[in-house]
Amino acid sequence: MCLGDVDLDQGVLRVNKGKGGRARVVPLTPVAAEAIERYLKRGRSKLLVGKARRELFVGDRGALIHRAVAGRIVQFWAKRARVKKRVTCHTFRHSVATHLLQHGADIRHIQVLLGHASLKTTEIYTRVEIGDLRKVVARAHPRG
Image (cartoon, rainbow, N blue to C red; front, side, top):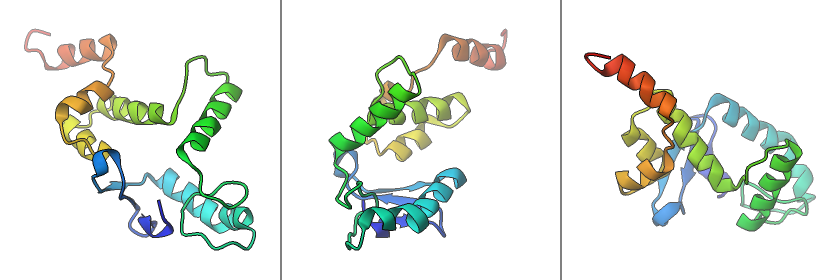
């Protein structure tokens, strides 16, 4: 992901090499946009230490952060937060999809956000809890 892939004015991020090689544009939440803006203004230049890089996210020596390194960072902070389950970068995709679904997002919108060609793939990502199913049945079933 390059610096040009983030547009803070529009509040979007371009994912050019996503899952299946499909490009897409995803909206940034105000919190995410603010965090990226802070990182760009304060943190990134300290990491680069005079180096010029196109990549948006860089490591502590100013180099590109590879997927494996990002995974280790996530696992470090999950452990520090005393999360008992195994947490990976991919866990965030599942979590976002699940939370969006739980809060009323249409599964087709989630499909586009995640960049899935098939709705069946999106359904795998969304963990529907029995409590959520009960609420839907109570709300939507004519005899609920």
